[in-house]
Image 1 (cartoon, helix red, strand yellow):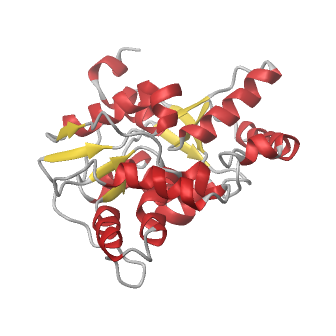
Image 2 (tube, helix red, strand yellow; image 1 turned 90 degrees about the vertical axis):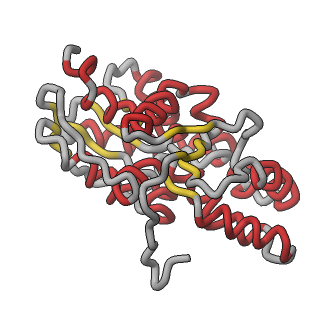
Length: 260
């Protein structure tokens, strides 16, 4: 495990697992496919265990420990080989890496399994930067983008740093900062269902800050945030939209994207 907050990264592997997340599976499948494309282009074989479901974050954040444990236990043994597990969602990656060991803290055998899995969990952009060590070639026209970095993903997986490092490799992409970047979009899993008025107000603040940058689009590594913010924009009749970081990176760096 890391020392003093510094993670020690392995060498580039031949194979990885993909934990696709329930939201990407149900609502943003293109983001999952583009994540696979980015990994395969680096010569990495991607395996997708078909029995995977949710990471357990909704139950965990809602205060249901037994349900959380059941969901986490179902994922725990889906990745038997000692390969990295890539998660195209910072908040889900944070759940599996930082909270799974806590969930099984009182069960020594399962704790050992949870800690072993946690050490192999990588958020997608983190893996691309620090393990695959990608070198991206920009094939798109000049564009200004803004980042929504997700409060949980920033705090637990530092996705804002990894996303910026990847985008910095693209000379045609100007990243515009906004005043509310570190703040929550109001999604928070079940928070948006339990407190819709507060959630809507938070999302409104976020989209206004994103639009004020003058960016043509905004990017996020979390599908839940994208759903919340894009739905807020849709309800307003606004054409401004965000997209998953994986899809943006793929469209900018492959030959087909260069012709769009």
